[in-house]
Length: 439
Image (tube, rainbow, N blue to C red):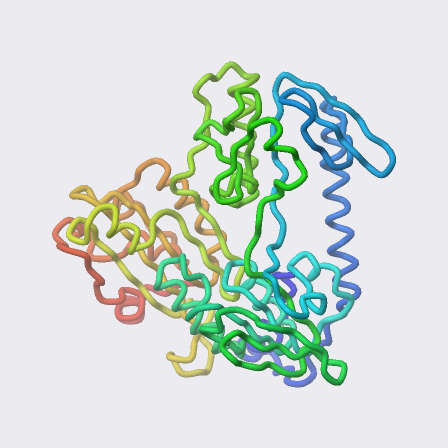
């Protein structure tokens, strides 16, 4: 869906700047049904690949709802059938689901799962939420042609991200035409008027004429109906309490993934599962997953890549006097030949945060084209404990956007920069005079 939205943006806004005729109102209309069929077919194929993989590995797949009978027994129920399974070791990986706040008229809304069931592109959609799912879906729908209203409880979306990134995305969403309703304190009611949905927020704002109201305020773990209390598995903030080795409060029961609420990302759950398997069955006694410096991407428009601490987090841990912050803001080379004012070109924003005399890199944050692909390599570097000097010593790949992260600040002088700093915007101020174009 993100790729389809990106193609739509290219057709609507970019082609004329590269010598192709402006499509104007002749931009091809999206065939939503065709896109949905292709997407659903791909997911079905993936499910089949996973199922066949388990079968080939000798794993029995039993579909149904599981609940503990005792610490070594799980009863699985599906319709009128049930199976009783016993094991020395049991792993809970039930994941999470969309959280729907109590709202008058909630029956008129869909959640983020319901997005994938939509049979047509809505003309007007209200997205409720401020997290990554909300901004991703808002961006997709807006780019594909919907009028999008994003309802956030407080001042902006992605409040837990570094302020440079959340502020930057906020500006880009507004520029793209997304209507952001701020400080609403949530949705009070949703009602049907003249065949359309009317949304009233707790702050008194009213949005009329919506075809779809999509609730995406967050997610909750699937822990109900598992009989966890019966076997003594303890919860904390509704999530299963685990230590760094995925142990629960019951010696032979383990938990991993979103149900634990530590880092709610699919690759994180996969990594935790592999380490747990190594420890329980591979003879690696101290195998455990690290939850530090986890690279992640938000598939917003534009994308966000981030790894490590935000600037406020780094200040809290190390003290403002012990960190250094490098900022850059520039227009990607992709937009270099666009016949628009420089100020109107989409901006790439980068922030590099270091700590201590050796300037260990503790945070990298990027907003802009290509941030999704570049973050994996920098995540490896941060896992290895890289410093600013390590980045400085790396030869830049030119012309790319990622080269900015290895050319930030004057080479060889980074240790002389004192205090929590925001140096001149290297990309914006120096890119054109020094011919340091970005792509």
